[in-house]
Image 1 (cartoon, rainbow, N blue to C red):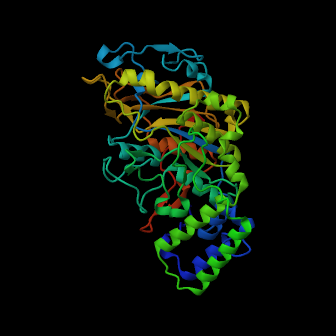
Image 2: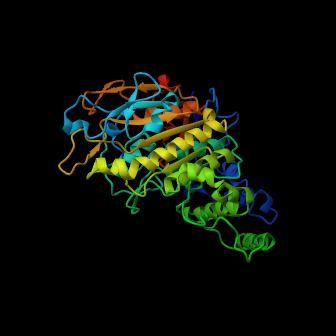
Image 3: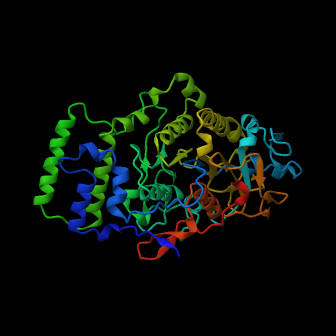
Length: 467
């Protein structure tokens, strides 16, 4: 029998439950000592807590880091090279051997090649949406958006991504770390910062399950997360007085049971939870890291985001996405080969290798599942501007750590890398595998859509070869 956890739609919150929720998250006068535990308390006050734990399978991983190449890197020039294909398909780069006999990858990834024994490449991922936002949606949600388009934005009826769901599941299981369970750095999945990818926020689960989005470059000089610290002129006692006054006004005023008022309360509690926690502030403070470590990751947005991801999972976050944009920076319709060689791959490889090595040296790789993926692949045939266009029919991704069996390739594409030949795999299958590694039986845990329909956390099939 399936276990259904009801997410409380925002519009159904009444006055009494809203007051109870404010109290439960520590906004009463006695509450600053518990506000920093918002991420656990919100689950207790907003949904039916699971008892016993939803973790019913062997937990191979405690957390996930997803590196997402916004805009879609060319699988044919990185992971699934076709040296025997005609020149208009194979491109400029040569394959090189890795430290696993029989597995070759691009010459652009010499350091990754030395660590192939830790990695699994999936070469037959596929879906059918060629728009950037709808393609990103299918990759991170595991299901198609209702239209194939780039010109779309998030809404409260969205199906949540597997990062959102990982945070939601953690909160059902009593998550109580000082940092948010789901974080996106440095900027959200998007096209041109105008159209944000649906699914990456709370969607039908409600705003309380939105990720914490950094929305700033961690490589900037004097980097600080906006709004994470109290203003220097406001002491904790003064903040406490303001909270007491706010509570008094709330109790005497007329409360409106609406989505907007509930969202205000949620965002207020999240903000207070962060600014009242010294531990949270320290996790986001990259100046705590030695210069040698920061240099190792690379003094650029991607490198410092990867480093921040490591710090966050060390502090207890369950899912961290590093969106390697900004926007669709991997969209190589023109000059694919010079862009890959000179602008895109070198900083990406440096950051990725540093992350894998750092996690391994700290004893964290075995419990941290690292995913490297994008919207889709690129066309086998090179266009007239030396570029490759959108191609969702077959593309590659890479997994490591967190119980993933390294040193292998799963699936085989055809001779031009255009379509899966053996072992086709859907994004939903990746999701099911990730949830299985986290200990969740995703097909038998439901959340509730805004229209009341139950939806399984994932309807994909576990890729047994990976585990």
